[in-house]
Image (cartoon, rainbow, N blue to C red):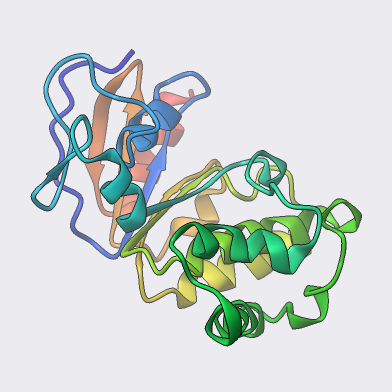
Length: 209
């Protein structure tokens, strides 16, 4: 349970760190109405999550820790096209959008692959592609590297670093966020520290004892 949280998240790169069970995932799920507040409100611009959830999800994409939780179609191209089809996009424009995002992430060769045959790193990139293709202004990553080996962690980190969108990243990989503009430490459902990464990481390491 979160308590006494008051935040404005305006920086381009924000990390959220903390012990397991501290409330990190709950906090970021509030940002695109996957979780609704029981008190107070969450705003994205002029929109409020309790009233404008569908519109907010267009603006705030979400990449889960386990990509299998968001890959819904048997073929890669169909999975990436799924959200666009729900918006009414069809034909050549649909195919072009899918091809563009696959090429951007360096995974165009996976277009016709069956989703279940992908490696963990490939699945995470396809999950990111399915969010990016919707062109959100902010992307939330909930521990995106936890299930990846070092090579794929670095590959995903490079893609996050290249994003034009704001990225809010929940992670235990402290090195990943060393160059971010802001790091928030969550402990026992509250904001324990909020500042530059070096200071936040030092605080967190001391907290861990």
